[in-house]
Length: 235
Ligand code: URA
Image (cartoon, rainbow, N blue to C red):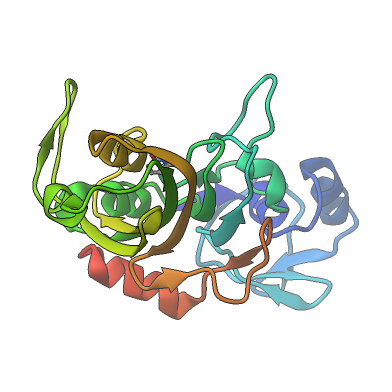
């Protein structure tokens, strides 16, 4: 049974800072099972129904967001000089983090959550979660680019599995991979003798950017979270 302090329970559910929540408790506005609670440090089960001003509050342990990442933001939780993707998410939770990384100059779909197990499984190449990227490159793709990228490639520090190239024209296309090694798409396209001039992640498994403007985000629905968990065999 997962236990949590009452003041954290309410602060996580956006009732204010811990200090503000303590004040609410002092003002006798918080009750459990009809009994007013006076101790902010009380440990409660996460499934407890807490009442604030007679309104029921249910604890949500995990939060999941889908962000349309703009250029110029680091996929990190904090950085001393550069903006991070966390600055784009308006949440009181301090335990959120990006699932995997998009380069600073890459745009597109990024999941932000506080569910370590799901994040780990989505990024595990053995779970074969497809990530699809739109890219432009210079100079033109070679004629046999699709065949080359479909096979494993040996780099100095890792070997990539095959990817699926859908060419749009000589200088752009979609590349789908199920791994997430550092600069992987840029390096795979680089292997063809081309340089990526722009890169955008357009989908991750069944999730895409439909309905979002660049820089926007939305919460994943319960059904989407469940579907992701099913895909990576998580109960
Ligand atoms: N591959 C890259 O090279 N960069 C990214 O940001 C994502 C995948």
